[in-house]
Image (tube, rainbow, N blue to C red; front, side, top):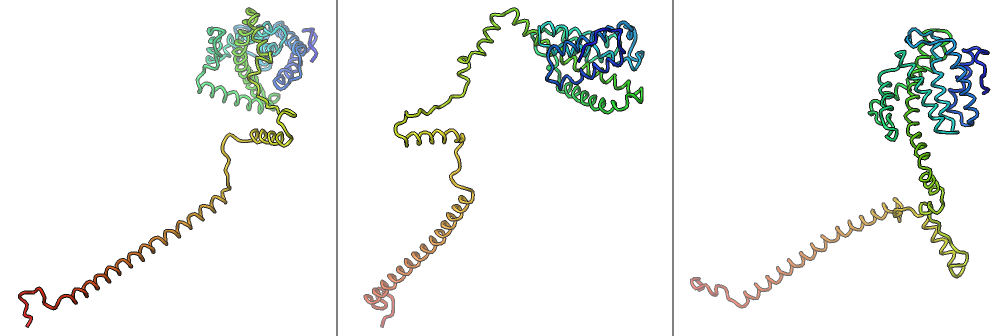
Length: 332
């Protein structure tokens, strides 16, 4: 977009709406360059100067004292912080500018009593925590993160619904602008928390250029990364003897490439079921035959014993007269 250069030569409301339309689409826009962001930032500076000239806000007034149509102008410093944070040229300086804009935005809200206590505590924690410590918002409890996430989602849905009626109902318009400011507070704190870490890294690189260059060169050195690359197996054109040996070797390599890490099944489920049924039937037949063979053998043994006993008894009777051995028997 073309930057606004003369703060006296435009309508504040119209130009703010134009710049705001560009700012809200930056998250989904990936084709803009540093020059585009600088032009947007210049337009926001002009809007900020115009707001100061008109004295739309006073440090001793609260949100209820602000005219509904003026509430949206409180977002100018937030947009400045967001746009400045997207400029990559002279990165540390632009991050510092972005941080100052976010802090100015939060300071104005705090002076007007529009900054919730929980978000003020998060902001204060960022100033107390060392720059090289972990991100402040990452130390929140699970319940706090869930609450913030739900609230941001709720704001997004309400903004989408209320946008249809802001020109028809002043109360809806006021709620709409206040929700936009609340959403901007969440985004400002998240951006400031993230840029703390980035600024620390940039500062380290500036203070330790040799160490930073060494790390960068190691990452860019192909030899340093060689151990992390995939090992490639080359089959020489004529290094495996005859032609058939080369084919066999190539096929063996292909088989190993596409072979999974576990043992594959050697038969299908249907084949396994048929084999189990066949073995079960064979076991059943064996079980039927085993008792029958034992029974026949036992019957033959019993029959033989009876036969031998009868023969022995007949022989004894033939060799011994009736009553022999019975001294008291009356034989006569």
